[in-house]
Length: 155
Image (cartoon, rainbow, N blue to C red; front, top):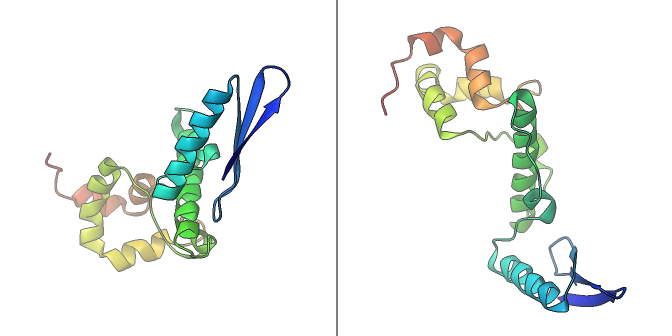
């Protein structure tokens, strides 16, 4: 449920509290803007398409390792929110293997996975030291020979 509070002479703060969601708030110059925002966010929550404000406002630095690390953090946060939404333990991200990959990473890694087998590939990938590694760098560093011998990609 949304509430709108006047803050000073020229600001209105919208706050949304809805069961199973973290509370959200934002400040606007007009009451109309606050009400519109609250309506949209509540609707997204109810329809199951809400993205937490911290994730929505995340700024990614577009350079090498920093981007990779930020994407991992973002992916983990999204997976945790989806787990919570499904009434599952959000800590599963720490204990269960998963990989987030771009189409390109998947296309490059797929022939290697097909060669060594999915079980062997992910047994190495889920180790504590490698589970946060992006798919392509992991494939390149741990399956060099298989990657060299993989058939060329066709697009």
